[in-house]
Image 1 (tube, rainbow, N blue to C red):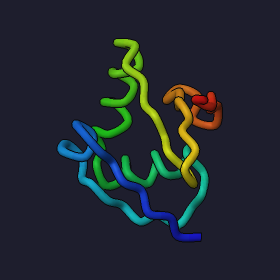
Image 2 (image 1 turned 120 degrees about the vertical axis):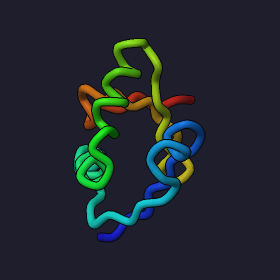
Image 3 (image 1 turned 180 degrees about the vertical axis):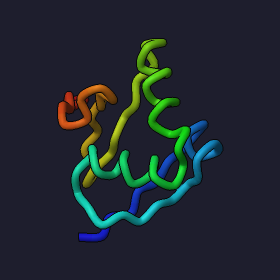
Length: 77
């Protein structure tokens, strides 16, 4: 299934605002973006080390994503 991925803020400015990927897995989304932008995953890992988090919106639901464990999401109420 094709999924549109939108990066906002500094991520969008550095790596591009929109990607279309053929997956619904967060892990695969990150791998696809990194395949085209090799600095993407190292940047995310560096941010995580600095305790900078990322929020993912999917179908109107917000979740905090952990880059080291992209399948682990914590829902934000």
